[in-house]
Image (cartoon, rainbow, N blue to C red; front, top):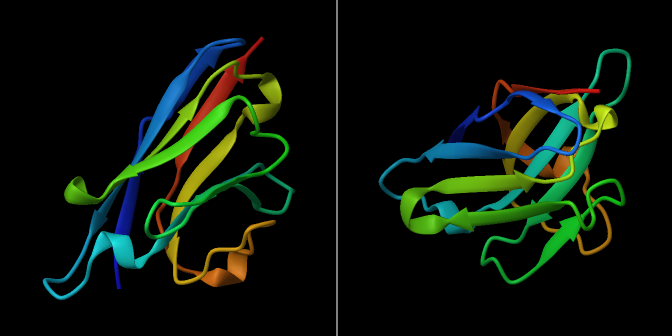
Length: 128
């Protein structure tokens, strides 16, 4: 299965932007476009929240209400890379952000149980 590593987190002021990157490592028989890819986030004491998801062929995306209009998920299959462009950041976006790879895409939600490979996370902190 694919292994994923996140990068791009950091400290940003309210209203600023960050782009998170997730790089996948695959075996020679595996392909990045075999996987639905998603971004999750989690703050201490809270459940992990699905933020955005993109179907394996890139034809569909899903955003949580908290991300709609501000975040954009995209990927580059040739480089085995997933992105999350985050604009108009708010203090409530402060969290550890995780990349995940799975075999299922849901049109109306993101289910954590659908994802089989997880990164270690990258911290995003939005200061007011």
